[in-house]
Length: 215
Image (cartoon, rainbow, N blue to C red; front, side, top):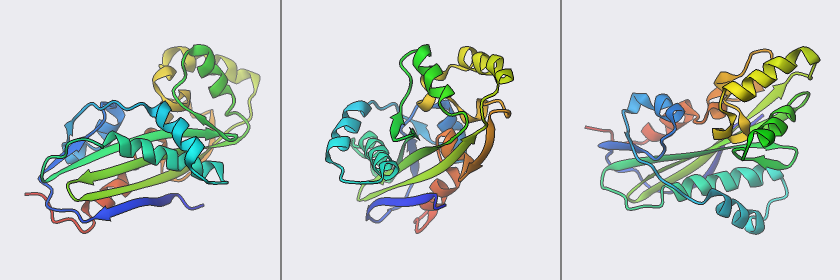
């Protein structure tokens, strides 16, 4: 299974003296701690971008179409005034199940429906990453496949405890992989950090590939 895909690349990286993570996600901040990035909050209308892309992207394969939408969202997050010698990093994560995109649930009932739909089958998690600086843009995405075990009644109290204790409403698809009980997961294919919210190894490689370095 191929797990890393290019989406867009323009220009060449210049000298990088500063990193900015365009996210207040504590998970992404921790994953990129080796860069010691500045943190900047950014807001975009993700659902409007999704609706527009659904209507305009011509792609028969739904997973690929969803991944392209994910890329457009991460790219939109970096559409701002860029400071010189600064690399901006933005990302977006979506969950794709049975030809649907699972965003953050609106309430606990929706979170429960999402979470219970995973048992007994596979779903995919896509994380797109945008690296941007003056004169340079690179967007790529990674895909991971997650296989949940078949449901059995003894899991019910564990599922209920997760839904009520782990704040599923602030996570795409109603779960954070690092918080899941190990009894839920049969296997994963791809980079675990795609599921957590940022493919660290691939991101680091692309930042420093052909880089002029940081003083």
